[in-house]
Image (tube, rainbow, N blue to C red; front, side, top):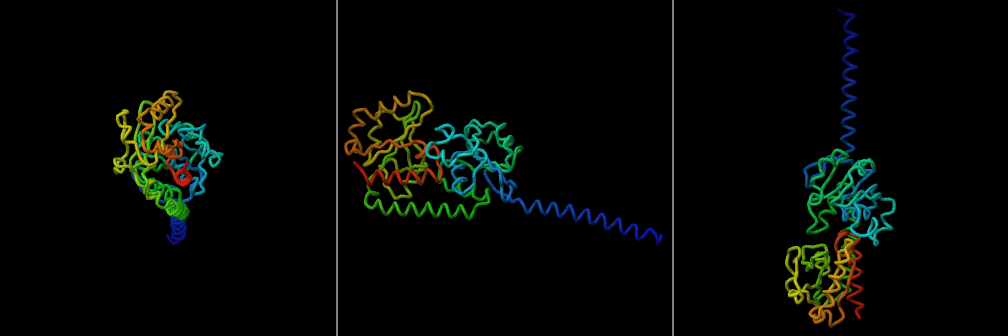
Amino acid sequence: MKRLIPVLLILVLMLAACGGGNDSKSSSKDKDTREIKHAMGTTKVPKHPKRVVMLTNEGTEAAVAMDVKPVGAANSYAGDPWYPHLKDKYKGIKPVGGESDLDLEKIAKLKPDLIIGNKFRQEAQYKKLSKIAPTVFSKEFRGDWKENFNLYAKALGKEKKGKEVLKDYDNHVNKVKKELGDKKNQSVSIVRFMPGDVRIYHQRTFTGIVLKELGIKRPKGQEKDDFVEKGLSKERIKAMDGDYLFYFTFQDGDKKVSQLEKDWVNDPEFKKLKASKKGHVYKVDDGVWNTSGGVLSANQMIDEVKDKMLNEK
């Protein structure tokens, strides 16, 4: 019996050591991850992700602005595959299909350790994406783009850099706001041409939010705290009027939308608008002013607003 005691002691110590090792490994793994609450629940993500795939245009802008180069990203709505105003910043990123038409096989081949997308666009693919890598979703696009930006910063482990980016953006807004001076009191109308549809954009849009931050007045009827007025007929041309009118056109390869735009802006009633008579009608890029929807585009839009309003014809 006495001889058995040392043997049993050794076995107990070995088992304890093994158990301690597993706890250490588990503890180490937990230290390398953190939980992120998002639109689909709570997900453990790497504290320092190395291979990120972004599934929205505004998300890709956010990542790049925070010095994170995704290994893959959803294609831009315009350009091949990136928006012209962002293509230089996106060199080396692999396209993985459109926001609503993702190529899951391409995403899997990139071996991501984090995927960031959007519930509004990709809820149906969430389970499949989660099997590829930890996946975090923002909720929607309509509303303040900064809400999504802050979620992405947290998921990427870039909160400090994210705060710097937003501070720089706010400084940019305040600087241009001062430079615009009394021009802010002149109303700015926003119109969009799409295949088979003409829209007026209100406050709760990417464009509307940026203009509101700049303190720019909107025409009566466009100050609504909602999204857009869709399906306009030409009887609504008068509702487009303002001291300035900016319009953008969504191209999807259909030449009909270009003809639609041409038909409206050359309509006699459109020519009677105050903005038209003053020479204050400007066509701007849909990617910059609307579909990209991120911090890089917002900064560019601010500069374009200033350029047009302070250097008018």
